[in-house]
Structure formats: structure tokens, C-alpha cells
Image 1 (cartoon, helix red, strand yellow):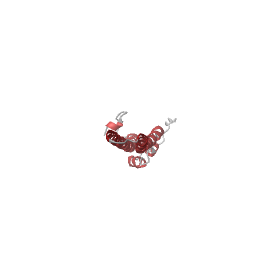
Image 2 (cartoon, helix red, strand yellow):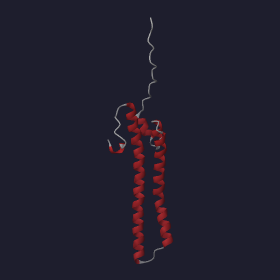
Image 3 (cartoon, helix red, strand yellow):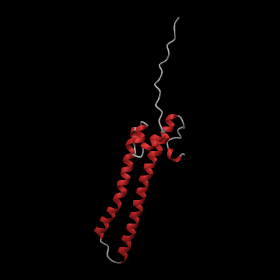
Image 4 (cartoon, one colour):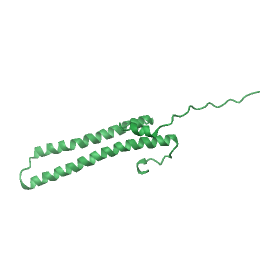
Length: 131
């Protein structure tokens, strides 16, 4: 009697824990490494660090500009105050952008882990706009 050969069985895929992926992303990029996405693992920490670096240097650049300009009297002082207010808005915008990018790393790690487990369908390229 001839027995049919069994097809080779594939090794069981490791299920990804969405909670662990999200918690690892407290350090941006570690959740992506956990999900085996090395490109994203490089992009997220670089983006977060770059945005924090830019936001924290805005006050120093503004101070250097005002030290060089040395506004004296009337309209120049009012203009320097407007410049400081604008630099404060730029600082806050960049800082909040860094925090949002950091959150995006955590959210992405969780969603990708769910997709890998088959608990969620891929909603396309722009996951950020989907719940």
C-alpha cells in the first residue's frame, strides 16, 4: 500500500500581542521592531527626536535673533514681542507634533499587531484616519 506524502507543515506563526506592541512603543520604534517592521522602526524614533529637537531650539534661535537685533523703543519693541509670540506658537506646534508622532508610533504598533493576528482587516495605507 502506497501512502501519499503529506505536504510539509508550515511553522506556527507567532501571534503578536497588541498590548505589548503598544507598551514597547513608549520608546518609539520598539513596537515596530516587535512587529518585524524595521523601516518603520527607524522612521518613528528619528521623526520624534527631530521634532523634539526642532521645538526645543526655537526659543534659542529667537533669543539669538533678538540679541542680534537689539530692538530699542516703540514699534521695534512691539515687533519683538510679536516675534516672541510667533516663536512660542511655533514651539508649541512642533512640540505637539512630536507628541502626536509619538502617539502614532504606539497606535501603529497596536494596529499592526491586530492585523497580524487576523483580528482586524487592513484598512488601507492611511491607518491614521481609521478607528
